[in-house]
Image 1 (cartoon, rainbow, N blue to C red):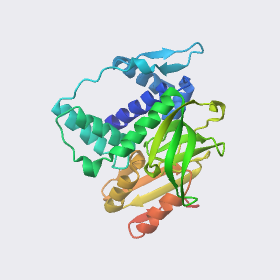
Image 2: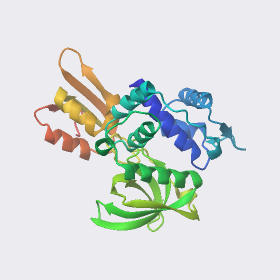
Image 3: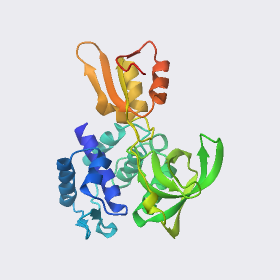
Image 4: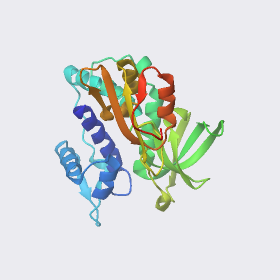
Length: 284
């Protein structure tokens, strides 16, 4: 799990440091939800990998877009190992799907792309990344809204992906609100030539492991699960893996985390009433 988390944090950090504006160490700590010491370890690792980590006049950190290193093709053994790490995060992780395709393209490993990877989603992620890096406005075409039950185009200024790369945080120009847009609900996207004009109003509030966004992670959940419930839970919510421990000699699993909403975990518990026990969490 450490290797898997480390790989994905590196991918997240690379994208984050390429996006304007340059970042303070404190903002990187918040983005990765880690310590200052760990941030510097990741920065040192990126330097070792060949990335040119730079600082602006205000001592803020960034990676210049032109400093990308040439990718060295993976050996079949390396590609197979990386593939297993990627697939262990779950099929819903959009960043995993994008990396998976690139591993497949740079090696002799063939990975059943029809069932494991949706090419158009990876293309959307790639185009959104371009908009973030270049500081351009983005037109989301044919976005299906779960709230309004409608399909429409959205003009936005994208700021950051969620941890699982299944959504992007963006400032919507029409409503003048910061919102999250689900990648799977986008028909396509277009990077416009118009530069971002509302950067002072950009905000990013990290979502919980169930994908809910807000400003307060103040709801605690404790669950005890059977193995079957645990396997389904981890598949549906890959980011939960770090918060789950096996209870010795019981065949059961314990989950504890703070979340922003009881809605998603509530649905899960209702679907496994005989296999999930709520412990603690009186409000839940």
